[in-house]
Length: 587
Image (cartoon, rainbow, N blue to C red; front, top):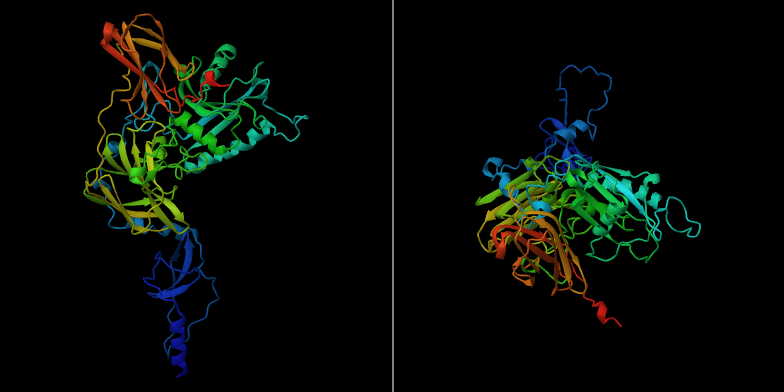
């Protein structure tokens, strides 16, 4: 009777485990269970609790048998956290038999969509900032990049190498720079999951750029200070070679709080520079705003990868309202420099995702996908759904808690211009059991765990994406045989709501200049009409502009009079957010 009571109590106290076997999920570290002649122990493998390989239980001697010879005790082999056990445990969701095989998917080339609103640089070069193919001058696909920091010293804004006795509390600029650089390098390692590293060199102190003048840079969002930097290069540093580094970073001293000329942080990709490689270079300018490593990564995203800003230039607009979405301030550092994260789409455009880690669908009626949130794994990480040329619905797994993940949905619409919301994302992650219908697709989260998400994508054609009507071409690359040659093209503000466009051009008989909104090419603010003029140096005074709005200036050149013959079109986006204050009306 006593024996039966003890057995009953032991059965009640023992935890209940389903499917006890090596690699199966368990619930409490250190717990043990017996199955199939083995004793299993619950151990931690990565972020999960699983049963170990187990130890065979030796059968007890039967009555009447000779006693077994007792051998010296051998240390138990049942030791938690054995490295080889971790390698044997496989991700259960990744092996789910419901996952659609890659052979049933669309070729990834379809989802490497082109940028429908590219930049057209001088000499007719097309720059895809938000699509493929990636610009050859970018760091796409490279494993490392080289950066040279050039400290600039002005009379009213020195770059200090030692303490200033008159300002004992002020930071030493060189020390501050040396402190932030390791964080910048570590940030690149972290956000790329070790797939990209940067080398940052500082120009030796005897070679710092010292100018016998005050700081010419202007503070304020949207002000392009690169013409001022290039003027310093041309007039005082014309012998400096810009052909050895991927990006050159110009910085000023940190200065005093509230000092004029501080606050500028901007980047240039493929900026004309006669001393650069092939006549161009990539650059970043930071005037007293470089102590935050996130600013470095954001600006280098522009200069090394030709990325667009993903935040809104006009904060009064809400392009994602109809879809319940927003610009990816919570998900990508190109929208918010304080977030050390990147969307999978941006990682794909950087070459930080392998083709084998990306899945593409377009016309499949239904498909199931597993996406991993573990950056260092080789599992699939990004699902791309092609909606139209230049338009993609994307999904990726993001960590929600230490033991679970959620699904992030977002749209890349390259018909939308830079600064107007070309990427819109869900405001929160989708959890297990949730579904979202969006632009002709229904995406459902089937399962989640600590490593990723299992989802289903169903093509519904309900409220499907409708491509916009074709817009006027922003520009045409110059044909190799074109008789029109443009060597200079510049548009700069020139008074209240005015601008001046200047060109150096040959081979033309007539031209036309007009200015539109960047988000509506039918909204024209200035139109010159066709002007018959074959002079090589041209200047056009532009009037009737609007403030606080990014503008697009179109320039068309023709080989015949009255806008006839071969046409060369070029776009310029240098006019951004003109001031609404009229200096003439100030008291």
